[in-house]
Length: 333
Image 1: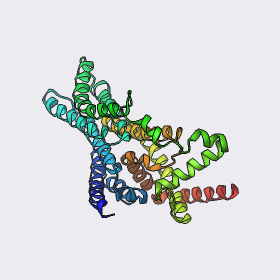
Image 2: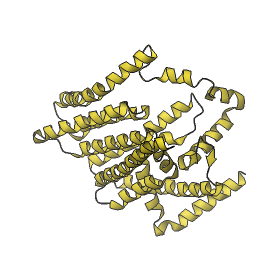
Image 3: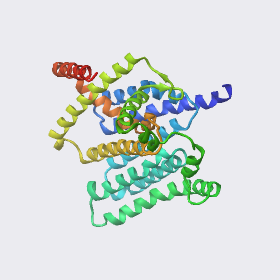
C-alpha cells in the first residue's frame, strides 16, 4: 500500500547504490577490463528475481549492499601495499570494514559470512602477500581494529535479543523456530517422499526462484523463459570453465593480490551457498534469493563465462554442447 511506498523507494535507491558498488568492485579487481564490470553490473541490474526483491519493502537489498561494500573494501585492502607510511590508511580501512560489518550484523543474518571473509583477508595479507617477522603481531593489531567496531555495534543488539528471547538466543533463531511451528521441515518431507523427490524439487525450485518465482513462491514465469535461462546458464558455465582453465595456464601473469581477491570472492559465494544448504537441511525453503548476498562474485562469474562463450572460435563447441544437452534431456524425458 501507500504506507510502504517510502520503504520501497528507499529499497530502490539502495539497489541503485548496489549496482555502483558491484561495478566498482570488479573495476578494482580487473581495472584494465571495463567490459567485465559492465557485464557483472548488467546481470545484477536485470536479474528478474533481484529486481522484484529490490522493489519490495525488506532488509534484503540493504544486506546485499553492505556485503558488496565489505567485499569492495576487502579487495582494496588486499590490493594496497604494506609500508610504514601506509599504516594510518590501513587502519582506516580496517575500521571502515568493522563499521560495515557491524551494520551488517544488525541487518540480516546472511551478512554474518562477512566476518570469516575479512578474517581471511587479514590472514592472507600478513601471512602470504606481505609476510614479515612481526606478521603475527601486526595481524593481531589488524584483527583488533576490525573487531572492536564490529562487535561494539552489534553487542547492544545481541544483548537486546538475549533479554527478549531468553538464554543465549542472540540471533533469535530459537524464537524463529517457535514462530514457524507447523511449517514443513525437510526431515518430514524426506520421510514422506524420499531423497530423489527432495533433490529434484530442491534443484528445480532453486533454479526457478533464482531467475524469477514471485509472490509467496506461487507466481512463476512462463516455462519457455526458464528454458532460455537454462540455456544461458549452460553457456555461462561452459564459458566459465574455459576461462578458469585458461587462467590456470597463465597463472604467473596475475598479481598475488588478484589471486587473493579472487579467492575472497569465491569464498563469499561458497559461504553463501553453505548457508543456503544449511537452512534447507532444517526447513523446506528452496528460495535461491538467499544467495543474493553473493551477487558480486556471481555477477563477475556470469560476465566471465558469457564473454568466453561468445568468442567466435568457440561457436561450434557451444552448439555441440547445447544440442548434446537437449538430446540428453529428451532421452531423460
